[in-house]
Image (cartoon, rainbow, N blue to C red; front, side, top):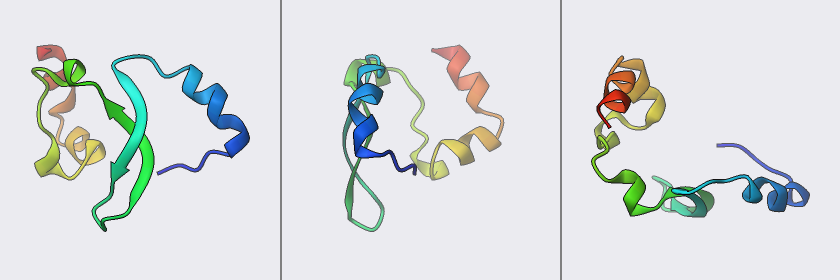
Amino acid sequence: MYRLPVSAVGDFIRHVSAPLAVGTVQLADGSNVHGFVCEPIGAAGAADITPFGGWRAFHATGSASHAILER
């Protein structure tokens, strides 16, 4: 997670391209924070990395580059 000063949020959001967006994300502890979400079309055919616990763990398996190339 990263913190972003409120004064920088507008400029940051302006540079977020589809299919990504900024929305509400629920964390494992049940709290809600603002974070990246993906439009359904951007996830179509993508690998579900949930069992890995996140992108970093998935990437560490060496499977990340293979999954990206398959899309």
